[in-house]
Structures are given as structure tokens and as C-alpha cells.
Length: 151
Image (cartoon, rainbow, N blue to C red; front, side, top):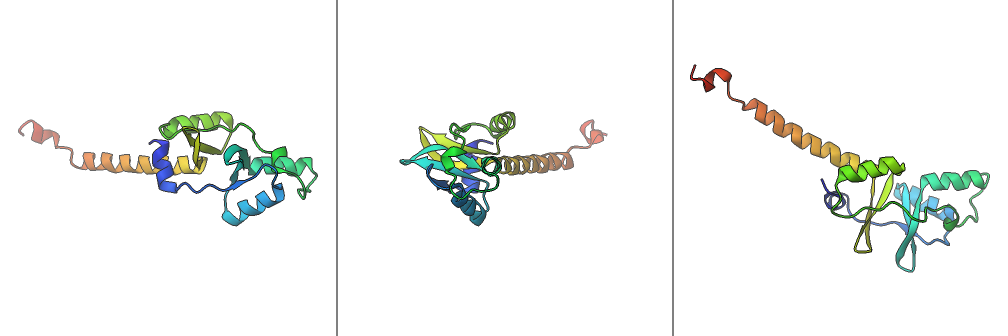
């Protein structure tokens, strides 16, 4: 399966925050929308990513006080990205190697959405389920060995 298919299934809604935004506001947005990441946008372009991992690092560094911590202080400045024609397997491998859970999807410099490791896993399950059904149908319709030989 390719990333284009996954993005079509999940939708391309992008939740974002500005680099000068407060981490506390980012947490509120993430909780309200039940999401684990925000794209950091500056002047209409992706400037980085903020995930719950960076929020936790900021929380630790600030000894539990996020009141005035800017997103730019904790965000990932150059996040791993993928393209529409990348395979889910290759993106999964890159995500695993880089130890990231969220990847922006970019095409010709344009941000189109964000996929998560969960989205990749759902796609893999859907694909495996389809292949499983095909194999079961094939096995069910397998000709008897005796019938092939004219027995």
C-alpha cells in the first residue's frame, strides 16, 4: 500500500500551531482533538513538528511548568517526512529506525497531511486481511488431487 492510499482513508486534516505558540496551548489542542502531534507552521510553511514526546521533554526541563514555554523551544525542527508514492513498508521502516510516531506527508513542497504509526498499522492489518480472504478463497476452491488425475 502506498501513502496516498492511507492518506485518502484517514483524511488530510492538519492540526497546527505557530512556533511562538505556547506548549500549554498545544497540549490543550492535542487533548481536545485526541491527537498526538501538531505541525508547527510559520508563514504558511511547515517549520517543524511537536509531539507528546517533545511536550514531555519540555515538561521535564521546566520542572512541570509549561506556562510560557514556546513551541519553538521543544519542537523537532527537521522532522522525517514522506511522499505520496512511498510505500507503507518503507515509511514504517524509516519511522521505526528514527523512533518517530508521526510523519508529515509532503508533495512538491506542499504539506498534505500527517500519518501516524497507528495509520500504518491499520493499513497493514487491512492489507493482510484482504490477502487472507483471497488465500482462503483460493484454498477453498482448490481442486481435489484425485479429480486432476481423472480418478
